Image 1 (cartoon, rainbow, N blue to C red):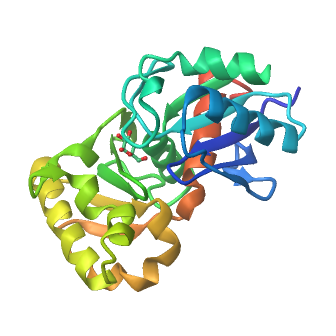
Image 2 (image 1 turned 90 degrees about the vertical axis):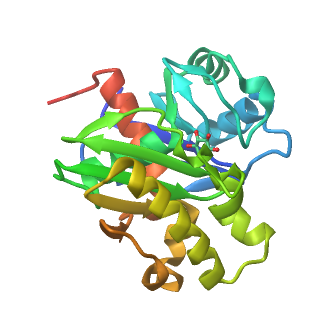
Length: 253
Ligand code: BGC
């Protein structure tokens, strides 16, 4: 078995995406394969979709997946944008059984952060780096001295009386039919709150919106330097694969 290559999967609010990743180079070796997230994103329906991705690549090696909720040692603890029945599910065991492959799952923002810090926009940065994934939800992850602080759920700080992600995510922009200017002014309020709480040296913006950076980058305001994610929306796939290799201590040389 080739342990350098891992099937990376990103479970998102609107799509479940996968690709085979060379985890030494941080490179996707195949095109991305995407299946729309089932309406009821339950353990059963998501397992089925992940199995379709495994079959698509005829894959039988290790799998690393990113999940949009708190993942503590392979167990899901929160499910803001997927079905509540995920809570307390041992996702590593569930998906390992469903796919017949060893599966390691981490939070999706943590996965994206790992990819950007190891191979992308934050490579080599030893300061305090905050990465925000802007998509269906708001995913947040911080690194200090290159070390990850897992499950930082800053998408749920209260802004305007509600979860920040209901106000400033890409889904909020679409639902509330906001222009990029209005969305950016909301996101700037969010950035200010995060910066006042955490004082990062560098902010990286990833997730679904990073495909359209040119539409809003000039509109964002922050104290810290702010840059787009290099892997754009593929960071979750690459980082989840990397985390799995790391977990299994696969060909570390
Ligand atoms: C979840 C986070 C996740 C983020 C992005 C939030 O609703 O609570 O765990 O990282 O969405 O998907």
